[in-house]
Length: 235
Image (cartoon, rainbow, N blue to C red):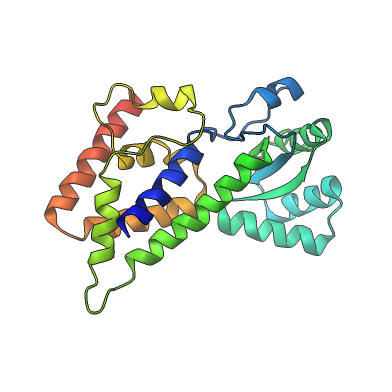
């Protein structure tokens, strides 16, 4: 089980190595294709992802989805609900980069968070969300009468170093914790927290809370890594 949890955590981190720090639209097709990507084939298949915000009403988002993506009002309403609940939703996907960029700019012009990225990276992120939900479920599980063992397994792997990535390493990710001697998975998780969105962020917070409740030693360990990463990111 330790190996399974370790593999799951490394898949999440290998994916987030390539995720942007904040939603933005590439300036043009050349910039879109130059974005860091884990896709070994570098296929020209892209996704437009719309992000949740607190400035626009449901009606604003629904109307824009109907006007720009040929959705029915019912389909647009379902997408708006997913965006509100999950924090983002894929609203278009195909190989026509110019068309996707035009769609994305329509949303960004009214200050809605939107990204255009390769489909490979986008769907790896979606899989990571499912894995995070699975890890959260593990924190609530028990083995016989033991309610702590799975949380202890997760804690031990979060506080262990990452395995070498099977992907082509992203140079920017390599720099992220270059000043830290032997960084652990939790270092990266805290550093990449802003690359996630509403639902997975909340789920990870529950995972961290479940680890803190294990013992005083776990509180000190998690707190130490949290403070260190915050100080490095602010510096």
